[in-house]
Length: 612
Image 1 (cartoon, rainbow, N blue to C red):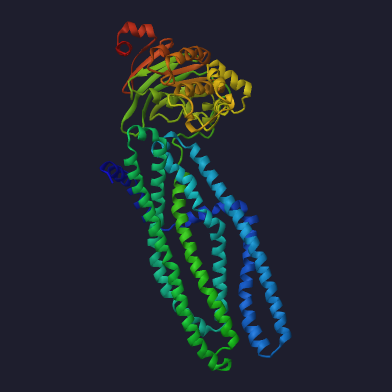
Image 2 (image 1 turned 90 degrees about the vertical axis):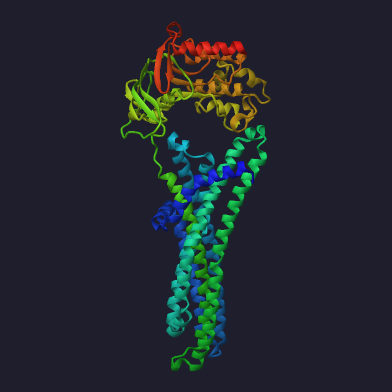
């Protein structure tokens, strides 16, 4: 592996190291498993109850048949040479097995429906909750790691819900039934064959911690690999542009190898349990044959057993170890479920940093009057992005925010949309503190157009309609015409029904930006925020945009973040920011006369254009 790939791998390992340690050291949390099982509640009286009844029928049949064979067929029918009774017993056993067959069909059907419904609900709950979380949550997590929680971690619970729970109940019921019957048949022989259980329990307990650590590591390695895959696919053009395919492949090979090794280690440790159970079964069988033969020789009258009891015992002993082996597998499923549920509930327990008040105000109509009163804000509680900013934007006014990168322009826009809350001070719209406003009603009246326009997979029509899902086709087309997007859309093979892939790669940057303008216009907002929205547009397209902006901004409060003079010079007020502070403000002419920071910015822009 090259030094670059190795360095990248080391940084990823460092990033995940703390998470791995924390996950491994947590004790097995039965309350968390119980919380997971609460997702069964909506189906408790239907599929779960039906599956339990079918399971009881199947278990009862399995416990009854060996008694019939040993105590009735052998000790009575064969002993007395009663062919009629033996015939009835054969027919009865056949009917019981038929009942068992029908019960198993319904049990498998119902548990599969149950499992699929639970996984559907859990994934829906997780996705809905993640959508409610604040921007700060997404600032600290990659899209790949979030994808792992919603897809892989929920999928890993599928086996538990479709088979594990009912099998667990069935195996426990079978074991308890067998133990009771064995002691009823012959306490001495039952104690003899179960002498290996304490040793088996002790060794299996020792195995559990190692198995659990391994499955938790599997989940962590999967998260790393998915995170890297998402990052690589999103940045494939940059990778190819800088000829970094080899280094990226080497790094992925390392991540892939770690994932493979973690699965191999976990599978190897889990596989140790079944041979251990089979060895215990072998010891129990040797004891049964040796001691059982001795008891048969003694005879029933001398504290021994009958041949029929021995046969029943052999049947039950053969049935005894399978449930124990499956219980080990179910325990492994529980370990995997806990590793996944820890990660799922970590997200579900995450609360939005931006919370609604209980009696939040709802905007029926918004005028768009914005006030910042001594607003201070920090993204990481260390570096201050805004220093006690105070400003006022009147309803219907167009203002511009200018300044160097990191001056706080986008932060102001984020606070107006309430993607974040200020560290101190208040942000008001129409006199209402945004902390007391219902988020959905606030954002319903605000449209944000970013420099990096996101285009969803789907048609052009669907992408524009994203601004207002109930808009008619005619309204969508009209919005596109207003911003000048209709011209290029008509040139596409399928027009408005043209399919665009994720991020709209078949469209140019300018075309994507025009779609975002149409989307914003269709939403008919009271406040519109343009965050470097014209940065990716060529000069010819800019002429169309300037014409469209006059219609788009008319009668609306507008906040424009831009460097292009042509975009901001007609603004009613221009705020010049530096390091989170307002240095000066006024219209274009006023600021040019002051010959301050704004004047220098404009001058440097013209010098740059002249140099080109």
